[in-house]
Length: 165
Image (cartoon, rainbow, N blue to C red; front, side):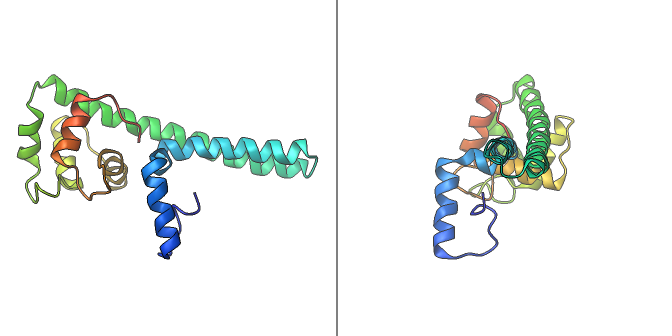
């Protein structure tokens, strides 16, 4: 986790980030981080308590990290549900996903649909995302580290199962 959030761009850190994004992509998502923090909180509590190191610290540190994890997991699930409602609404319209992508990906279709274009698409489904939520959506829908949602990613999202943010 410390490599993912590191503000510096040293070669080793960038390589570690690429490895994590490739093999542990769930850690880059809201829900995945929440589950990780739940695990970390329980391990902190168990280690400090079972080894009789610091009972008060076990409770304070363990439960604090655990509660942050629960909060992040619940928020991620709520945002995932919101994204799935957009997907279900698009499916109900029986629209061709390729045509819908081409209708909304106007600025640079080769690079993919931007966050603003995806927000316009979601507003047609009656759901609006805040700018910070759009960052999570693009992170979940974009494969290969792109800046926009490609047509392949978009069609796969529409046809596939729900995605956790």
